[in-house]
Image (cartoon, rainbow, N blue to C red; front, top):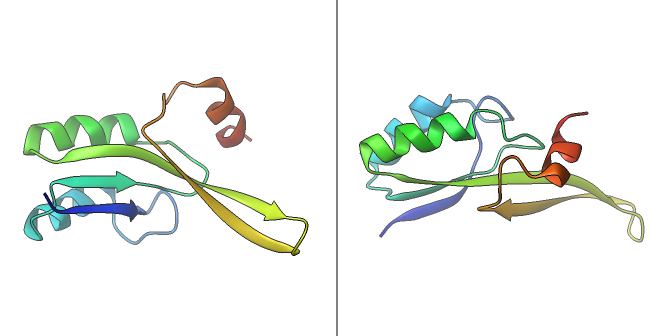
Length: 95
């Protein structure tokens, strides 16, 4: 198994779309791919379907932007393998 659990697409701040990311994963022998765009789950369902067709396990993820008031710094929180329809994820992503 070869995995990358922190991948962004051009939906977020990456430079490639889902198809290009999956092609790149295939060419590098990646079998498991965690897609963690910033503050959105857009496109993950479709990517999971494509991944299944080509033999790559797409692990749905998100990189949630947050703020640490104690240090005054912007931080990111990674989440994986959650229900894409979950109400709390929607609350974060919809605004």
